[in-house]
Structure formats: structure tokens, C-alpha cells
Length: 346
Image (cartoon, rainbow, N blue to C red; front, side, top):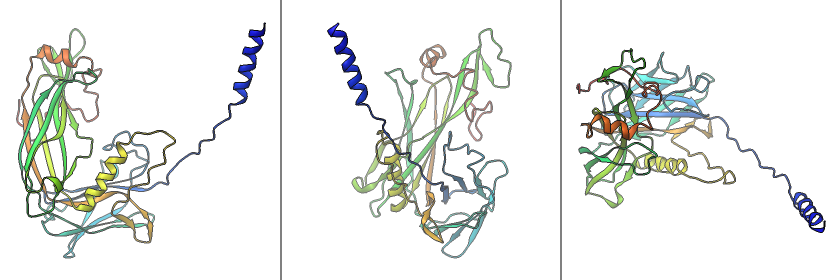
């Protein structure tokens, strides 16, 4: 009996020591988000406008977040300007339709955005610097030993850094590869590629992490085996890879460096809320109202790679069987039955 009373006392005592924790709700005001820039590549150039909020995919803007009816203009230091037209098909997307307006090395560019409510945002000037040439792009097949992800190809590049200037780099990359499943006795009668009892479709894979570099420690030397993309293997077939190298300004490098550090930070809900990273686009009538994002001007270099398959069909499906989405992956975002444009047939 004493043991029972003692147990009840301990329970009552512990319960009396518990207090409700009042955790303050943290929120940020809605801000304009700007994504895009100008290069010396062939137009059109793209500027995406949205308001801050929860996005499932950076390429698919929520209708309530996309910015419509804005006037978007880019002007160079000689006074020549071009107005971007709003796309009727892509939410919040504005494109330069004048193909004679091409970014020039050495010119300085400024972005101006006039919203429907009268607010006007202007970027700081960005000088378009030349990019060094990508020497080579290549890939190594890598086994993923923890079985949390399919095996695939790690793509690398080599480039020579100029010694006479301070250089900052950013890289993006994508790959188109086939995803497929065994048809068996179920229905496979659609327009996608069907070969030897397998159904295939094409799915793009994009580099999602910010990939930047300063030449502080490599000035004038070869930048070798820089990883730019991992392309998982889901089916037998070629991988079409394209890598783009951007020259960026020191200010753009600092912005993307802070952005990457915050996006990769892991903490708890009690950590201080990270301060918004201020880019180079500000409301002309309110210096405290800055847009999220960065308008850049970049010289670019591109290089493509076609990766041929390594294993036979059976081995590939044994490797990828636990990772192939239902329906063979053809329901994934941006999956298509059509072969990617401008790539050779396999």
C-alpha cells in the first residue's frame, strides 16, 4: 500500500511541474520574389515574378503567388532598353521578345519592375563579364551503397581559370534520361516509347543546389572535376546532359553564398529566424522594401554530354526497381513521351 501511495505522489508532483510553453509564432511579410537575368546567349531572356509563400516547385508558380500585369524593363548603360512581355502560358513569367536585343560583354544592365499597385523596384547595375570556356564535361558511374537512392552518373566539368582577373562562377546543369517499368500483362497502350516489354518516358533532372566558386584559391589554375549534377539511372538508355557556366559579379557571389548557407542550415524551431537575404532589387520609394532574389548579368559557356548506358536492362531494373514511381515515372513533373528537342536519337 505504501508503494502505491508513493507512486501516486510522484505522479502528482511531476504533473504539477509541467507548464505550457508559449512559443511565439514567427512570420514574415509577403515580399516580391525575382528570378532571372540577362546573358550574352541567344534570347529570349526570362524574368519570373512571384510573391513569397510556400512553393512545391520553383518552376510551377501557384496562381495566387504569381505576379501578373507588371511592366518589366531591362536597360543598359547606353540607354538602350527592352520590355519583357508576360507569357500567356506560364504564370508569373516575362520574356524578352525582341531577338535583336542581345547582352553584350562589358555592358552594364539594370532591371526595372513596375507593379500594378504602383510600386516600382529597380536593381543596382550589373556588369556583364565574359565567362571562360568549359574545357570538358564527363561522367563517372557511381554505386549508391546505402540503397536510399538509385545508382547513377556523377557529372563533372573542367575549366581553366584566367589569371589576370578576379573571377566568380556559378554552374547549372540538367539531364534528360528515360524512366520506365516492365509492362507485363498490364495495359501499356499509350504514345510513350515501348520496347521489349518496357514502357519509357523522358524525365528532366535539374541541379537543385547552388553551385558557386570564387577563384581565390585557384587563380590561374585548372578547375578540375567540379561536380555539377547527379543523374540517377532508372532505365537503359542515354542521358542527355547540358552544363552552363556563368560569370557572376562579386556581389552576386556573396548573395548566392548566403542563400546557400541559409537553405542548407539545419536547426530547431527555437533557432532565431534567419534574416531575409537582401539582393540588389529595391523599392525606389522605400529602401526597406527590397525584393527577394537577385538580378544578374552573366557571360556564359555551355557544353553538352551524351552518356551511354552501362548495364543491361535486367540489371538496371534490379538497381532502380524500388525507386521507380507508379506508372513508370511518366506522371512525374515535366515527364514527356517526346524525345528532348535538339538532341540526337539514341
